[in-house]
Structure formats: structure tokens, C-alpha cells
Image (tube, one colour):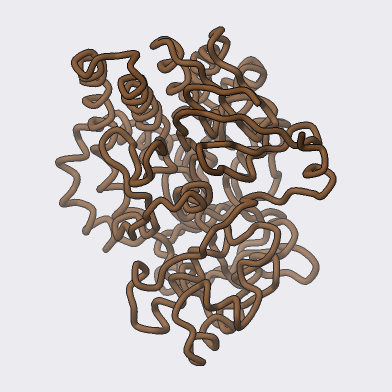
Length: 456
């Protein structure tokens, strides 16, 4: 079993930046990532795709090639296609790669597992032809595939990004059905002054909106009563906006109302999590360096709280400096000297976050949908089922497993966990913190008996 100073889970901006900084400080580093190529979701397969579709995906995407190049440092081992399914005592990490299981060990672990799109359960969301906006981006980045008749539903910057990219590709969306309201914007306005420190983000958003407007893409804001109609597949989106009922025919629906930290690995290690009211999700308890309340476990990037690619890069580098100092490769003085500009850049890039969080809140009707809507797609458990569990005395997601199978499918609660916690909290009149989340145990990803048998 090979031993490293630092093991990093995830080859997105936080993981790649941390690996390069740690290697430059003299640490041996192993980066484990599920994808065949580095880049994470934001820079997915950038070294190949930038030359093919860089004009569509934009400069923010193509700059990721600088980070992927850093993984070629001699002190970095990059294990692509590696699915981590357990992190045990003394940081023995078990993973599957190429159909076989293997293990490494490390002095410190950095979880840079990024974010997941917030589930948006609506009537009809399980129909073929319905996917997340992020899934649509993956198709565009990896295969150059674009939906010819798509409606974008939800809210948030990613919705504008994919709409602008579709416009550049010559296949604009049929329409955008947006859930944010004028009241949301008014509530966000008090944070506009602070957001101006991150004016580049605001300018970027304004430019994307200008592209969408120039392409004459219809935008319907304040949408309510959203449903996806169809028999065997998605055929139309129905909703009400500004007092009028609408039905927009389409072949594809992209759903999005924000992203949330991917906390599965952190929870499996016993890291404490708290409910972030501004971002309406659970976030791990970490300090300014990304150190969690479990010794030796660090978390950086969107898995520590949603901030975006630039914030993730700065945070990853800061964590690497802290690890290098702990392992005796840097003095505290040198660590702080190198971290100062990174901290400043991170804080500036975070300045627009409070404004964005309030301007584009999660869609309330999708956070806690009507009783008939499926919440757990793996086991076909509805929101009504969860509320019935609460009526029978169920107080939390773990107890819910005694009443039904929500969270017990192949995704292990990744996509229903947040919805189950919120629905139970509302039904019982409790806070999400008091309600809690699923208890995550290894294996944190599915592993076959054949893969286990191959472990030496």
C-alpha cells in the first residue's frame, strides 16, 4: 500500500489547486477522482474540449487548462476513474479503479468533492427528457450535444450560463421559466453594496443576460404551479406567471435551482454539519483553513460551502499551505505570507454571494412539493409518504428508514436526503439542524463483491 503526505478526493478547482501548491511545498500527493479526466464539473475534460468548443463554453471554462497542467508535477499521483468507497482509521482510503479495488494511506485528507445540484422535484420531473441543467452542460462539454427544443426551469446563475452557451451554439432555449420574484430581488438589494466588491461576477451575469435578451429568448419570472406534462416523455411545461397560465411545448426540460455541498464523504468521517439558512443546505464545520472538527480531515471548495470556482481554487491552495505547515514543510510565518493574497482574493470573490443567495432562492414548491410528487427516485417514495411517516412519529431521516425505503437506493440518499430532511422538519415543526440528515456509512459508493475480492 502506497503512503502519501496528502490524499485529495476530487480533481476540480479546489483539488487541483491544492495538489499543485502542496507538491510545490514538498509534499507527496495523491489525487483520486471519479472522472477519466481532471477538471471537475466546472472544467470537465477541459484539455480536450477547450479546442473544440471553447468559444461556446467561454473563457471561464478554458482557463481550467492551467490548473489541469499543474497535476503533471512529479510529486503528484493522479488516479483518474477512481471511485472512493471508504475512508478508514489512519486515513486508509479504499477505492475502485478499472474494476479492481485498491487502497492507499495518507497523513492528511482533503475532501474537494464539490457540489451537487439541488434536487428540484416537481410534478413530471421523472419523465424521460427531463434532466438537470448540469447534466445538459455535461452533454455539451463532453459530446457537443445540445437539445433542439429545450425549456430551462428554475433560477440561479447556472441557468443563465447554460442559456447563454446554447445561444452561442446557435440552439437557443425555447423559453426560460424562472422562479425568482421581484420581492426576492428587493430583499437582495440590501446586499448589493457589498456585492460590488465582486463586481466581475455581476458584470459576467449582466453580459449573459444581454446575450439571452439579444437572442429574444422568452423569460417568464415569478413562475408558480410548475409541472412537466407528458405521457411517456416530457412534452410541455405548464405554469402560471404574472397571473397568466402558460403551456410551452418542448422535447427537453432542464431543471436547476441552485447547488449544494456534496457532504457524503465528510459525513462518513464524522465531520459535524450545520444548516446554512442563507444557502438552504447543510455545510460542514470548518475553519478558515478548511480544517474540520475531525483531526487531519480538511474540506475545501464547494464541498465546504458554495462559492464558485475561483473561491474553490483559493481555498484549495490555502488548505495545502496549512497541511504543509502541519507536516513541517513550511513555517507558520511563511504559510501566512503565502496565504494572505489568497485569502484576499477568496473574500473578494465571495462578496457577491449574499446578494446571489437572496436574489435566487430555492423554489419553495420544489423544496417541499405536494404529496403526489416523487422525492426518492431510486425507491419511488413520495413527499406524501414522508409526511405520513412524520404523522406516525418519525422525527428524522434515519428513523424514516424504519417506515420506508427513502435513501436506501443506489444513490444512498445523495439526491433525496436534503428534501427528506426539509419535509420532515416542516411536518414536525422543527429546524433542519434538529431534524438532521442521513447517517452515512461506508461504502459511500456502490461496490461489487468482485471488486472487494480483488483487494489484496
